Length: 571
Ligand code: ATP
Ligand code: MG
Image (cartoon, rainbow, N blue to C red):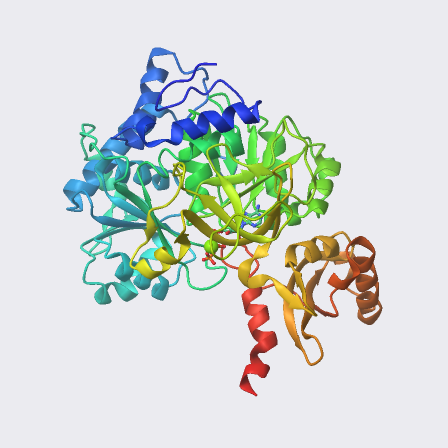
């Protein structure tokens, strides 16, 4: 097999795990990495050039956005190349930014989100994307922490920014994306300034290790942390996400549903597909609707890679999937554990497999299940090529197979390309996660003799009861097998005899809303005892209307756990 050098050719699908593991490992070594790298110049402009000469092996656009009215708009790589040069001119000349300056971007799934991302990279600015759900105080916090000089925002976030702009002395320019005719004092109208900007722009010669972007983590366990990535780590490191998670090529159209504010959007709606010359598809809508999602998949069979968070899949499988047509589609899910029951329901309803990905804002794709490999339900598959994933104890010592420990990424032999450079403004935290030659993820798991990784839970979520350690994932996966359970969150709860016991918070499916709750508690407990080791069954069960979640849809067990323990610490 031959592959291109820095930008990898995209025609080969992943079929030989061992071969790819060795190959990605060699690609990750320092001597094989380029000194300079810029995603705008090295990926977008390259695809634009190939498109121009007819050498890109696809007539798909680069970007395809549909709205709630079903109107489609598309952009080619050449369009993107040009518009991102014009946008870069706006950022440098109209907003007065210099390379190295920080920029905050708050936009929904409108094309300008992609234009500004690529332009910022082209101009050497350090971009931080936030969700449109951010409140004024969140925006203030982000501007102040990052020292951002410029903000690009949508119509609604503009009002939020104006409420706090006085308290943000670093902020020098503000740009809004709205209708061309609109004006607001102190703000530049993006469309207006863009229309007057030049197409000529000299892309900065960024070093592979220069900072490129700062992403906020999801805030599942506490306040979001600012993870800094370089041109190399995200702009190039997502090649691992592209090849082994999305498995996308020039011929593919990738629909990743995640919100534009999260690292997952950088992985799968920006870097990974465009590294491979694929088309990015997006549905510009302000709320997740299972039915319209299924309809889009049915009516747009060109979509060939589909990525939805487990929380979205849990809602999709509540609908009669069989009534929709499902073409050939590589379906993936990441961000939270994927319960085996969910894989089964998706397969039964659509006839399609659902592959799992594990990773973090701090990294690119780390581990997953793959079509060419035996799938072991409940396991999140094997380490991605280019990732030396190990289970280590708290002192960074590798543990034997089938032993619970910390998921650590070994950096002794080579540093994975996609690993972040550190938490901005928090050297202590950075030092605490880089220990003994490992990057410690904060997650717990086991690896079996064959290299399959079995997720247990976040370190903080593991429950200790009567000397046993119980991971919430296994109990939640057992519960969701019961037809009454829509979602569940399993946490520790105080107990005078056992110290702590397993408690499950459960939301019910629509058919079980009026069921006898006391009977159901016993039934669920018996069910868990029957499908998993009996000591893991939830001694306490509480039914709730909804579970506390992050804006990106992840279950915040910490909130439930704190409530359980609140009255104990007060005593
Ligand atoms: P914070 O770090 O702010 O508490 P977060 O960890 O949820 O939030 P992200 O970086 O978005 O922020 O998520 C990464 C985490 O999500 C992982 O560390 C892991 O706990 C969880 N995760 C992601 N994918 C999977 C998966 N397939 N199975 C289990 N857990 C997963
Ligand atoms: Mg985290």
